[in-house]
Amino acid sequence: MKELRVGVIGTGFIGPVHVQALRRIPYIRVAGLAETGDELAKAKAEALGIDAWYGNYEDLLAKPDIDAVHICSPNFLHAEMAKKALLAGKHVVCEKPLAVTPAEAKELVDLAAKLKRANAVHFNIRFYPLVRQLKAMVEKGEMGRIFSIQGSYLQDWLFYETDYNWRLESKLSGESRAVADIGSHWMDLVEYVSGLRIKQVFADFATFHPKRKKPLKPVETYAGKVLKPEDYAEVDIDTEDYATVLFRFQNGERGVLTVSQVSAGRKNRLYFELDGSTRSAAWDSEMPNRMWIGRRDGNNELIMKDPSLVHAEVRSIISLPGGHQEGFNDTPFQLFTEFYGDVRRGGPSASPSYPTFADGLREQVLAQRILESHRGQKWVDVDGGTR
Image (cartoon, rainbow, N blue to C red; front, side, top):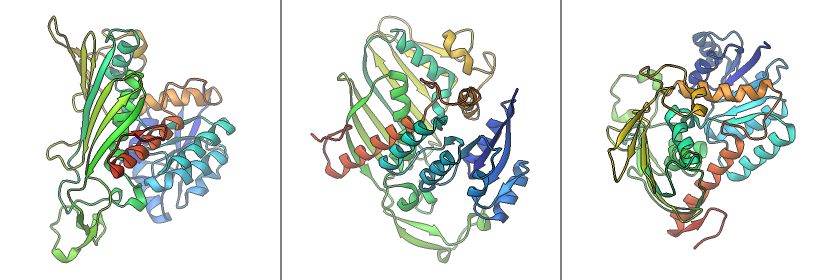
């Protein structure tokens, strides 16, 4: 079995998650890590047990024995890094968003197709087993005709005005924050599960902390300490803390999404409910190993994650027997397993089972149209028109 050598760029929260998931695949070796500057790159590589480190990511891309790279850097760097990785002949897995504009994302989709490189965007929530089970139920007609989809993605990590992160700065993360950052996961998920396409959007944003207190010291220097007033600088915030978005889907189905990063007590909760003509289904990312099924005439039920209880096509992404919980860290492992199956076969398949750059472009377009809708306070067609 040929060993595949993989490099990882970026070591924030999600970079080590990629490293851990990659190491679970027997034929993958994490052969290099890149960060900004030699000192940080060396320290992170030693902490993660990676032999080779690079203070400039282009030095990693120049290595001919690196088969693929994972891009886990801040948003504004994704497009540039992905483009250079493709041109260096690498297969690419990129954190979302793929880019900060639809034009950048479209360029990457076209380039990956031209160069015949396998490509993926890390919409990992698709890979919870019961999410795929619901997709199979929809495809088999078990949900009947879909009437509506509603839900939310709620967090509280930016609840206080003193909470700060680079994602608050539009020059680093893009013009939209809550919608592009977490709403993109929800929209990708419901289109994937339902098979429906969002045709029109109507959005309303709110920024509850129009000014925030940005720490003047690196996080590492004051972790666990109480800062003094002089340790902050007050800065203006130009991205949304909260949004509500109405959807019209392709055949007249309706939907609504609420996203918030200032909902106290909600640590990272993606929830959606799909209402069909025969039954409803609801799934909550904070309780991912069960799914609620609702009926008008008959008892409601809970479906538990168990390979013996799901459709056959779902079993490939279940690693453990029923009663053994699988969670967030298992989802990138399942995504990467499917992705590297294509890499071993030489390139992208005709119909990849994992989210690709085309899905990253889709979310960029949706986020842009939602932003246009909020600014104009009107319905906007996803294909570009307004109503």
